[in-house]
Length: 348
Ligand SMILES: Nc1nc2c(ncn2[C@@H]2O[C@H](COP(=O)(O)OP(=O)(O)OP(=O)(O)O)[C@@H](O)[C@H]2O)c(=O)[nH]1
Image (cartoon, rainbow, N blue to C red; front, side, top):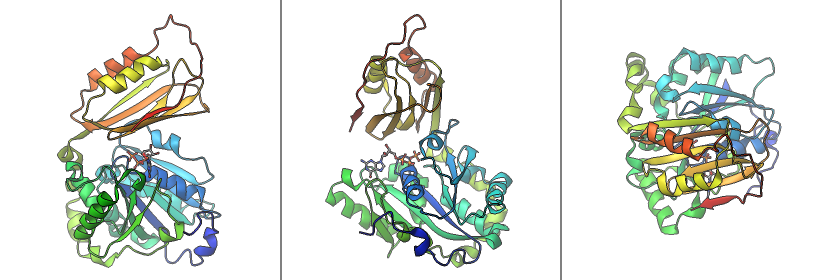
């Protein structure tokens, strides 16, 4: 396998071709998009990459989970970009194009619920078409969680339909039989499709950047209809039925109570959760990730004041109940903070 730390600028001698190359990373909730973005940023060598991250929910957890590199990272506001495609998105891309220090490459990570089609069409139907070059739409698929019902989500299916290639990620969690079935399912949607298998989204960068896979000509006929009917894409989340609940507190959780919340109270309609956790029993900053039936909590150092910040994404969530249960996990004000060693724990 090609090592990840090869000299990327040698591998991409022709940048820029015409317009700044743009890669769009899409894929359903928890599939491994942020993990892929971190792989790209860690192995990008001298390439100057600007990153636009977009998150469903009003707390941007991903921004805090991305490795700190000298790339330009811009957060694309709240909500799903494909629903809010508007001048501010286009202006953000302009900001990248107009940077004094030249940017070689733009990578956009969409929310897990985004429909890539309106994003593709925005690049092709506006002035961005003359200034950028859509290189590839890469869809990350969770090999363990995805199945033929594609989470009952149209967006999940459209992420494959409009992809130029699929990264079949989390193969460490899937059986060979499941992987074969998924490949067959994906190839049925897009015959002859390029599929890469990965663990923790580790793929050689020359296979995913500057690969010139997006066939822009195939979309041209759809531009007039897209211009007329852009607003049709504004409400796709309602159709899919997803909503989010966010929770913030400057007070720590009691570990035992939070564990009880996770094991006994967390509703099964929560599909994805992530956040930064603060426990009174631990001096560490804990990164919490829940994806389908699995969760893990990893300890790191604080770089900010300790806090709790969490987002839950699912269908038909009872916001007030979840918030009430989380409030009950908080340390009561008269209990002094005690630090003791907290083991990293996980389930799955
Ligand atoms: N076991 C396993 N876990 C993985 C793999 N790739 C990513 N993960 C974990 O899956 C969780 C979700 O990964 P993310 O990269 O945050 O997923 P995402 O697609 O950005 O998720 P959203 O923000 O919901 O869109 C994290 O806990 C990752 O560490 C993998 O190949 N195997």
